[in-house]
Image (cartoon, rainbow, N blue to C red; front, side, top):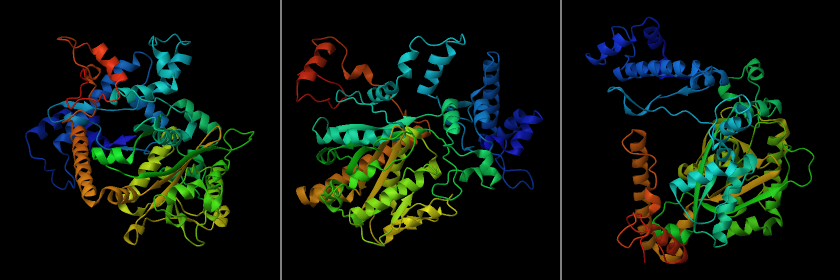
Length: 519
């Protein structure tokens, strides 16, 4: 793993012990370089290198005495050299003033906690007394949601392996459709650790680095879905959230709409003897063909099978999954009445993001909403030669360069499939936000639509501004909820009693000042 502070010039300054002198000199001179130097070293970069050197030295002193490696030393053992380039080691703060902001490194979350619970205690290592709760799959997601939102509604944390985010999306949509909730935070996260790296490697699910290099394939192209030389996925980590709400709530509150859930469902694969073997269960989305629930639900939004332009596939670059999933979508396209020769463009997002496991479908949904905005279908840069097995799938088109179809027509809808061990398949149809705008104009009028657009655009601008301020250290990206959104007790106000009354009052609402008041 490398970053901008590890250029040869900076490393030479570190090696000969002159980095500190260079920092002092830069503070009293312009940022111009020496004669003949093509790119001068800015004072801020010199200072960053100095801070990075000192921070790593401090980490080594602290960790080595305990017989442990620093975080960077562990990453260097885990990752091949050059796999990632770190751009900007420090976030926030003021480097020139010597104040480094947050240097964020991943904490392996539940996997690290499980390691402490099941391994470290037998090795005599000190472990937190409350480590058990952090090892439970639902606790991290539930705690984060309550820390940010502090809701009182339904609380469901589905665990569906690599299809978790898709199943979460289904759970959220179902809760809204059943009237159990008006707004749902859905999504999933996953991390990466030595256990998952070894486990997936032993299953031959991940790309073997040496085998890929021996084939002349560069590391950035190891994840190569649908390619005849594919050899498995590149494991990654992460995830996120997808916020769901009813259309009338989005209109009333001026919430931006990135897409409309046209259909979402999960399926099993029938009787199987192998846990990871792919199946065709999600083909049941087309049960009934042209009269299937998928077709009927999309029709209510003005979308036909021919309007579906793109499918974002799970595509793990394994020999078994990619052809199976391609066959599934091609068969479905014929079953629901897609016109022959109407292409269905394939997005293989894991060729860019790697496989984040449980959080993968969040990336897929986000990518689809980006497609709606840009009208450009991204390419699979790692795809060199499509597997001949896929020739049978006449609707499917695999791009090697981006295609701007939005210049001719709007991308009205896209499909996403997310598959998980245990034979769970998540299937979603996401529709362009224009469907929401059309519904508002039809039911409430153009004036109401324009008013919503103004409020939604203001929210987007404010959100982007807050994000950028947070990235620069000028605003907090996270602020804890003050006193659980209740006032301090006193002068006839009892927070405990107010909370009880609020939970029993259907008209109770959070005040404009962010506090629940007695009614």
